[in-house]
Image 1: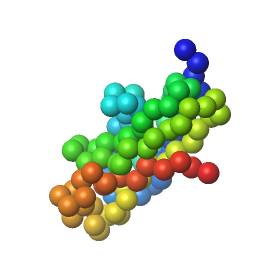
Image 2: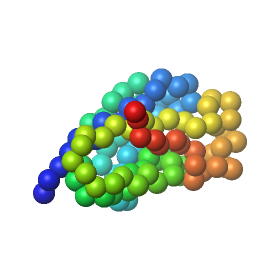
Image 3: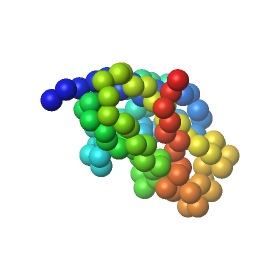
Image 4: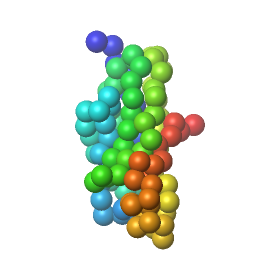
Length: 102
C-alpha cells in the first residue's frame, strides 16, 4: 500500500489545554495530539475522511483527496475558552476546527 505523510499541528490555546484530541481516519482512531504538539501519520494515498474528537464533541469531517503529496492540517478549538462550555452542548458536532494548513 502506498502512503504519504500527514502532519497535524495544534496551537497553544487555553481551551482544552489539559486534554488531548483524538484523530481518526475513516472512523478509526489513529492517534492523539496535545496542546502545542505535532502529530505525524503515514496515511493512504487514496481519498479518506479525517476527523478530530474530544469526548462527545467533534470537528466536521475533512475529506482528503487522493494524491501522493505530503499533507498538513491544523486542529483547534473553534470557540475559544469563553464559549467552550456553551459549544459543548450547542455545537458538539462542530466544536473543533480541522482545516488544511497552508
